[in-house]
Image 1 (spheres, rainbow, N blue to C red):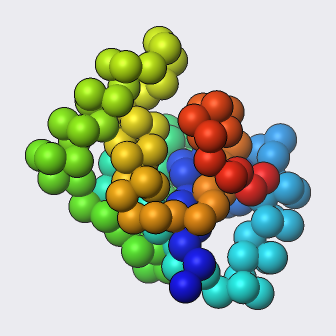
Image 2 (cartoon, one colour):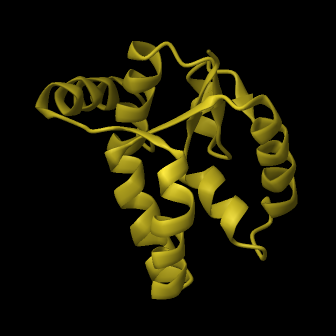
Length: 132
């Protein structure tokens, strides 16, 4: 079955109509829904998404994401091993690659993810097939 990793940048663009990438995100998501892949993300991406929505849009958006969108996702819960492998990778990359991104990169490789839905250039720079 096809697996697609969902990054915070894609979720935010999809859920926030005023985001510059919203229309592209909506189009990608519509195509994904038709294919019905496994949508995968990490617990670190969830934390990042909750914080971003809460800070920029408000508590209602955070609650809606939790109830309406998060249940669509298969969550890889970050344990100490995944955290450390991500931290090692982050320290091996140029400044600007966050720990959340580096953990995502490790997760994508370890779970043999086919595509990444993101608007963060680091995923493409890392060599992943990026939708968006």
